[in-house]
Image (cartoon, rainbow, N blue to C red; front, side, top):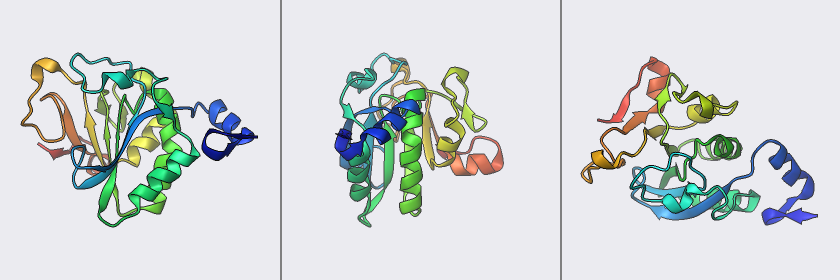
Length: 194
């Protein structure tokens, strides 16, 4: 039996058992707004933060959009292949909702294996702290590994009262643009952009 974008029934059951079912709201194959260079951006569905003034509130609903399946992964990998594509950006919704982490981790591993020269940016309303997330309820068995595969993390809840359109790659001044790899090596937060 074939399911979701060419998956067989057994693979679909494994994904569900591992909590790897996720929907996505949108894919942008030539994005220049959500990280440096021309990027492929995946907007996942599902966010419990519900920030006032969120630019993408339609993606708060975990059921919104389309299933993220093997065919979508292959589409994204193909879109990442051209040399002019700098990397992948993960947005939402929120990629660090527990359900989304579990679905994204195997895909992000594939991206890093196939395209080690490309960088991965991720946007989350949660706060990075010590290689994990400060909000313990969203840390899962996937959190630390997923973070370790990310190059730049934009963290922190969007705060409408701190919105500043002059900021690069973030919406409010409380959010940070973190160089994750340097941060993990040095043991304290190293900003990618101040």
